[in-house]
Picture 1: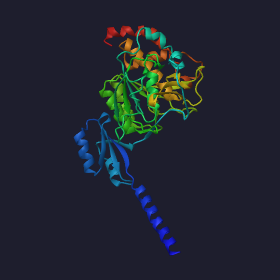
Picture 2 (picture 1 turned 120 degrees about the vertical axis):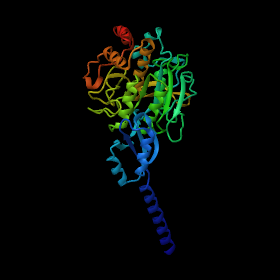
Picture 3 (picture 1 turned 180 degrees about the vertical axis):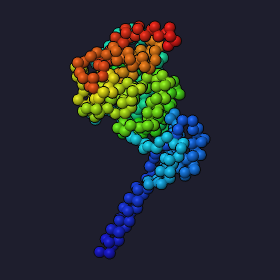
Picture 4 (picture 1 turned 30 degrees about the horizontal axis):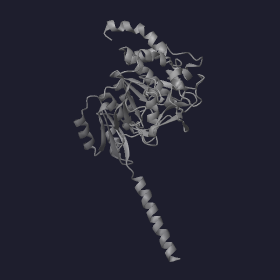
Length: 390
């Protein structure tokens, strides 16, 4: 009886200790500074309040800080005249449906989505040559035979700094944008673009605002012209909005998945931001996917059901989600930019103006299904902008 009681008490002590340690788990807050506050000054301010910096986020004039639960100094910090805001480091998730089918293409197959958006006729003019596309995702299979020639650089933004795609999502997204026209597997919308892989999402398809902002900053430094964001966040993050505005101001085309929440007014961020091209998903018959998020912020629709593309380990899979729709638009934007020198705002306007009306409410389709061939044809009206220095 006594030994049993002893074992029970020992177990109870260990359990209580574990709960105590769990309660002490580090939490993180993003501290945003007002414009004009330099890095050195921001460090000094946080040091004054005894706040430890985990990482600096220079793109958005902010720092990710370690904060103990119920820390009174955080409240004091929020009242400092140099602080603009303090918010949680919100979680983000890739926007893919939880089912996928492995496929072994015979020879080379052009996915239905690439055909649906009329990308093929544009290849006679350009295949996206020399346009840089940033893919903020789970990484890319750097050795995939249908991608490796187009992946120019990769960088990791998780604590482990891993760049390998241990999920498969990022490789699938990259393939829809830029799978090679090489007689094997599949072909992407713009098979000659240069892919810059920013791994900000882990093997479970999760990330944080701070990790995404670091990835976006890297994309900006690499002078990418398009960034694909096949992920979503429920919370309206001030930090992420600052990053989006910074890239938009620099002329980067930003494309994001609308989200897979379904229902009305269900768009996620960053797709909700006006600087971003928000992409809803449709099936092969042009109907909205039953999972696609809807709302007044939807800009365009693209194929997102049973999309065949590259996958980790040199494989190929059919996957669905607004995650799969967004890269069709990123590839289309790259094709436009490879043919004409136009601004990010013009890219968005042209894609919307030339989209095919699917006869659906705007909240479900935006302007409609993108049509790359019509977009290229309609772009001539913007050529006069060259005379104005564009």
